[in-house]
Image (cartoon, rainbow, N blue to C red; front, top):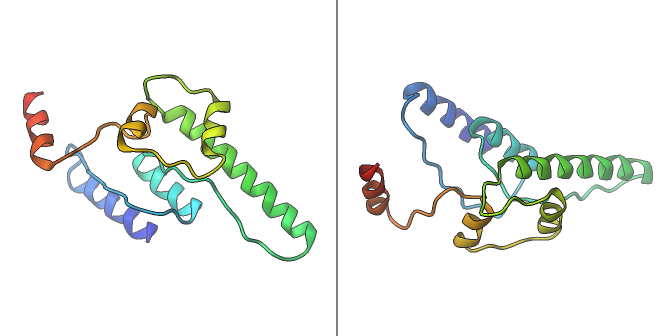
Length: 132
């Protein structure tokens, strides 16, 4: 699925580099690496704590646990870089927020800086663009 989204984003950007691309994502989560592929393409943010479910020898489980922790730290640094909310969150605050599933309303996501704008309808969004 992410490969298709990345391909479509790249096509839209090539077809009209000066045109904005609007993307709505309604997802319960999934593969972190797939999300990072989309992130690399559009420079947006996916709120998701990595999880794993590896079974096998203890040494193999330890290797996978170390990798999950590395990816989690990388994601937290990405959040720190991109969050543009009302207050500057420390890395420790972001780590605490991401420790467990964290549900936010649209207004809370705007306050934190995970989203840039809340669109209530296409007509209202068009009116805002026309006023600029």
